Amino acid sequence: MGISTEIILAMVIYLLIMILIGWYGYTKTKSHSDYTLGGRGLSPTVAALSAGASDMSGWLMLALPGSMYITGLGAGWLALGLIIGAYLNWVFLAPRLRTYTETANNSITIPGFLENRFLDGSKMLRILSGLIIVFFFTIYVSSGMVSGGVVFDTVLDIDYHVSLIVIASVTILYTLFGGFLAVSWTDVVQGSLMMFALLLVPIVALGEVGGFSASFDQIRSIDPLLLDVFRGVSFIAILGSLAWGLGYFGQPHIIVRFMALRSAREAKPARRIGMTWMILSIIGAMLTGLVGRAYLTGEGISLTAGADNQHETVFVVLADMLFHPFVIGIIFSAILAAVMSTISSQLLVTSSSLTEDLYKTFTKRSPSDKELVFLGRGAVLIVALIALALSWDQNSSILEIVSYAWAGFGAAFGPVMLISLYWRNMTKWGALAGMMSGAVVVIVWANTNMYQWFGMNERVYELLPGFIVATLMIFLVSKLTSNDPKVDEGFKEFKQQLEENK
Image (cartoon, rainbow, N blue to C red; front, side, top):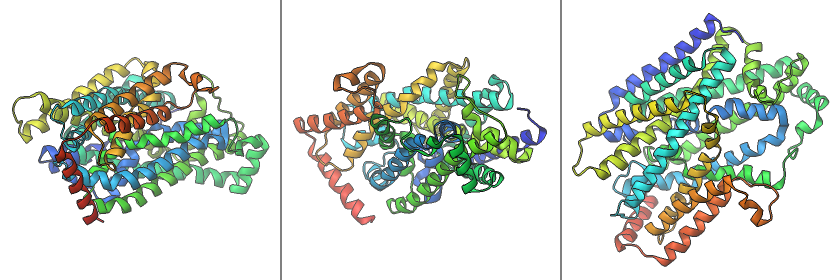
């Protein structure tokens, strides 16, 4: 695919807007709390779109349309699981987490909340959770850079390393200087751009094919099973796809948006905005794959699912065939937005853990706000450079780790976060046991044939057994241990504040 001046111009404008937002965020960042959590001042709209854009990376723009193109509606189970999980996350976690993190000594990170929730003087909870975040997110950021570099190398014929440097440089720039506010505001722009592109492409393609009726007639003539939701999926596969939704409860880069809301009351309007954005975007992605199959077949074009993953370029191919080059540039910027929004959020959470959870824990003095902001920016740069180095050779093993990184976070943090907000008698030992067992089960389950011990013919997604084991360990160990009475007082204070915020 060639690249024109108009395409480059549109993408340069997008990148400049990101940098300008980063500069504006820099002018509004006065303290470490501002840099890490935006001073808990996000509106429902910003929080919702930021959470959505941080969540949905290139998967939404490339992998989901590609799966729909090849498999049809049977590929939609994962999307359904994510929609259900995101909705439940907003309902059960958002208002409680926003309230409890404030009453628990104004915690501004997930590890900090866990330490303050259980009054863990040993620092074990903060250190363990901080290390998990730093390790997995460094790899996560690296995989995002690889994805962005590969996409632009493949679809725009821009050298992989040039693409990598551009993506990394702009993302580092606005994240490093602007902090949480810049990341959240850029997420609003990026999320809006993603939804616009995901709706525009299939709508125009539908018009070219002749509308819904003609499109679905064409799809049936190609392969009637493309419209069968059970095509090529077993009960275990469906269960595993739906289980992806459980991961939302433990994703630090998503749930930190709940903590940044102006108040717990605003979780409900934020949920409505966020879920509307998510559902429309996913419907657009799914329609892109289905209608793209009808349109491209009519044009005599076939995208294969071989080693080069041509099917995952259906969104790009459609855009290139249907639009003016400048509009194509805007649509390609949406793909870049999907990658950058996730990378920036993960960079910031990693930076927060390095400074707030690890540096402050091991230093013997109380660092100033100015020092922490400086160190936070330094941490963003260091982590980003490490991730850039890891991604330089397009190492496929990095991408493979992402397949269970979501599960690792979901199982390690999900049950701990959820139960800590609802069960007064949960102890720090229960939290530690749940965190460690969830992560271990995910890793072991994903890399062995343990599923056969349970009479399964295929491996269910590792998040499900990890989540179940972590939950059981939390309840078992908490029953065998006890809390400081002050922990119970803190939980009562949280419940009282929660009632007042309704």
